[in-house]
Length: 100
Image 1 (cartoon, rainbow, N blue to C red):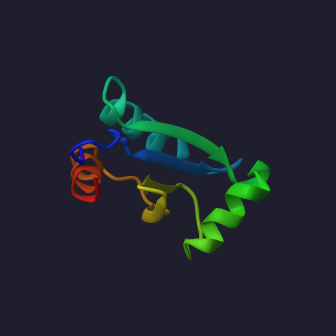
Image 2 (image 1 turned 120 degrees about the horizontal axis):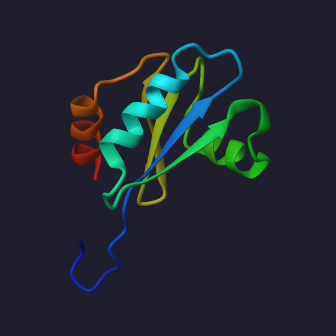
Image 3 (image 1 turned 60 degrees about the vertical axis):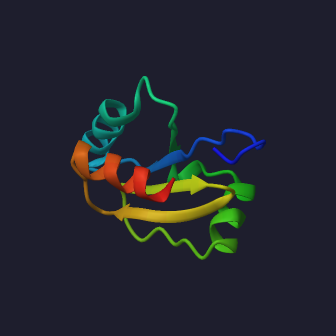
């Protein structure tokens, strides 16, 4: 936390789509890694993404080539962590702690 500043927690976005074989496993990893922590997370259907969020991805030069894709938002900036793969619980926890 920045002294005198707000305590801003990172947010994890899991991008999924119908027919994605690894998306349920990725969601289970994120749930296990971050439920009960100060890390927020949300699942976003790639086919029903909000246009404003899509613009934010483009602004940050984040491109989703495959699902599942896991993106972190920290301090207003977006960064792609994983694309088309399912990390382990320990891997994603380390990535998020390093990015925070």
